[in-house]
Image 1 (cartoon, rainbow, N blue to C red):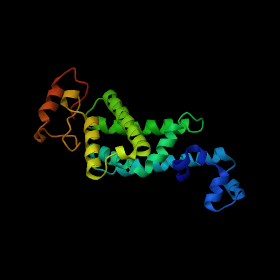
Image 2: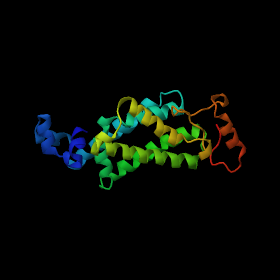
Image 3: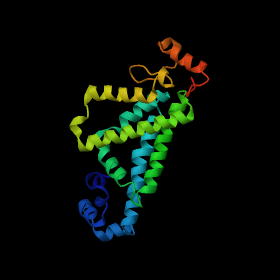
Image 4: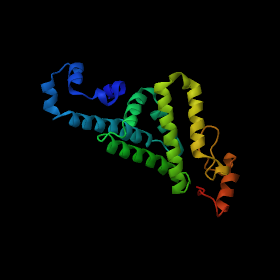
Length: 210
């Protein structure tokens, strides 16, 4: 993963990796028949580390809004950005394309599932999940290409709250309202219940009230 983060797919090469790890090309070929096999293994490791492990971790959060918040915090960690940027840039590579399609589908499906649980209709949840993923792609590009544009510390926390609030929407946008922390309100006593109630009474609403 380090080599991909530094050089993209060009970093997945037997000879330089063998030298980097202090082993021989022969030892490498004992484990991998060729570069394609090495790349396949690298993509498998990426899928486990950058998708499976993250989703398992955030799934332990107690509610959908908390899971989305934890997910946004995890995936915007700057150390992950170079690998993600390089692999998304190589998404049309024959070896990368199938793995990337699977990863994007699983990631957006997870986001959409949380949104459905929060009360959005499936079609609206899918649209918002795609919006969230597109925002993520833009964010990691900034992290890698223009890092000074990315807020840090408390400003980053506030920024992530704004992103989450935009994904969760509000009563006017046809979805469950979000409060200033980006947490979806699920009780009328939270001060936004009236908007949710109005949604549930409208037969033309594009989202269900939870």
